[in-house]
Length: 107
Image 1 (spheres, helix red, strand yellow):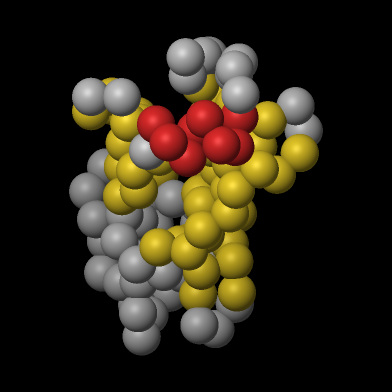
Image 2 (cartoon, helix red, strand yellow; image 1 turned 180 degrees about the vertical axis):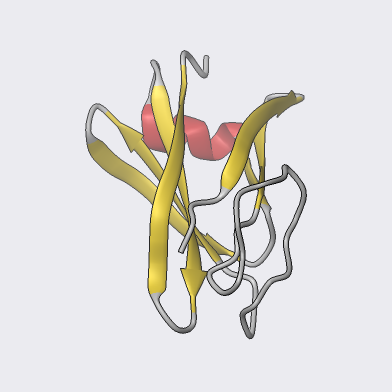
């Protein structure tokens, strides 16, 4: 199973929005930057937010996008940098490898 690819962030107002390109666990490759056939019963991802090494939020989503609202950032983080990791979850294999990026400051 391959990790999701091209995890990227954009800022929408005061929220942080994240998008990624899914991978495939069956008969796939990493040749391109576009979506590959799903090869699963459903599309499912695990999003994990960490700060200072600890998990502060973990959510499951059914699409290759997730928005971290300003209100949830304030509840979870206080101030400072954080990391987001995304893993595609397979019905067959469970959570795959995580792809992560660091966000320098959310304030």
